[in-house]
Image 1 (cartoon, helix red, strand yellow):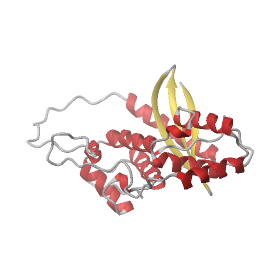
Image 2: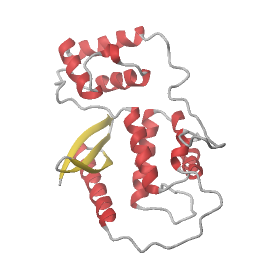
Image 3: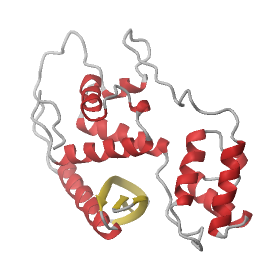
Length: 237
């Protein structure tokens, strides 16, 4: 088993890394780690991931036959409005209603950030390819991705190498990690909303900023290590 580590956030004294475990080409799982240094964050993420993998390999207790409930509970996936055909389906906006139609000012800011780094079009293409899997900014269709790119470039020191500079964790990646964590926890929609309301005063992940969504994922990571007893609200202390 080998680990792949990526720095996904650096802000002041906070560093967040994501660690993936691989066996050959098969990904066994991933975990986030947060600390004041990248090295310590990496150690925490690896510890979490190893602990989780050990739990997943532990023998499962024999199944207990139970009477099926008359009304199945809503799972955490319903928070994204994926439970089609149900009366309780909630459809959340994929983009903020405040997203501008004209991106010209933001693209000009992107050019300024690139100049500050000393990057030309070739360096930009290299970084875009690593981050989005395509080298052309004209193919960016989500305003959130453009904002993530700006924040990532603003955090880089001048002279950074585009082939090795840290990459941000995109919102789509954050939502995907959140989905996986909620499924692992087995949370219902109501419990996920309860945690959002308790800690962020919102009832939908789409109302979280990228930074808040990252924080929510870190809280869920901690809940996997120290789960609350059944029926109790998550403490996230």
